[in-house]
Amino acid sequence: MTPTDILREIARLEKLLTSKGFTAPHIEISVGFSTRELTANISYKAGGSSEYQFIHIEALDGFESLIRDTEDYINGLKSVPEIQRNAFVASVGRLIDQGREIGIEVDFLNPLVDMMGKLSSNILKAA
Image 1 (tube, rainbow, N blue to C red):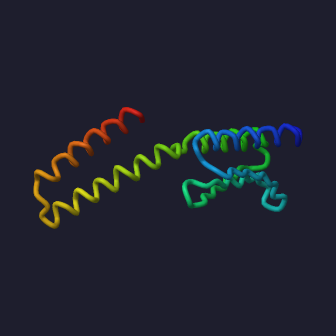
Image 2: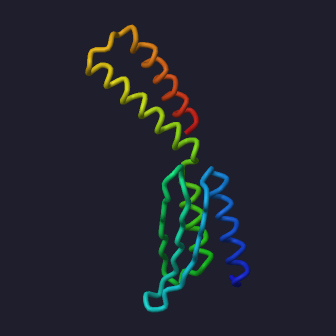
Image 3: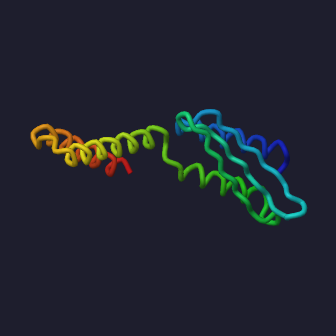
């Protein structure tokens, strides 16, 4: 791969992160001569927090392999809407548990429990 090819692939991978709803995507590739490895440093924002991931491979495996491993990592990430939906469902679940612990009447909790079941079912179908 030429430097231009590598830069083109980095731009494509950053766009892939953006398509999943992440902001401020940034990927750097480095060559460790003493360690004989290639590294992809991936950073992006999910909501308000910054996320970082480093992918290391043997230098002899080549840039194509590093690009492929980086793309596999990005493809394995849940999208921002999925992350937000999962966080919401978890919050509703904690709210229902808290209501039960403090003795909230069943008539009040049942609609929440029904909604939780529908949300969980929708998440499983989407996955």
